[in-house]
Image (cartoon, rainbow, N blue to C red):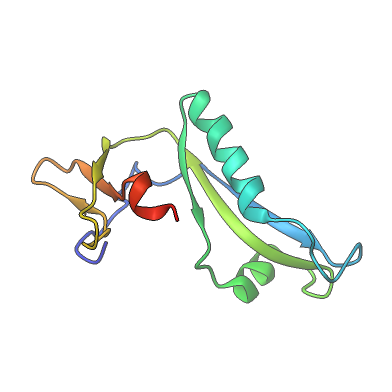
Length: 121
């Protein structure tokens, strides 16, 4: 959200999980890190945590910070976890309208979702 400066102090994730591929096992990955991340997040929600998948990450820099050999590991996704500090509300998106997240004056976080019948062929 371009108009949001967050997360603020005390609202940042408590932990990050880096989903890695071990390139010494196989160079051609044949699994989906999105499935692994989704499974982690579903389990986290059941335990009262919140989180999100982060795909937009500087992988080269993160490997350096973690002191991981780029010839040995490749970063798939990062999962941020923590206790939710905000209220998130799913709302119906217009059939051909925007799906951008937004906040109201009370800092409620809205996530527009399309109806199932609008996305299934």
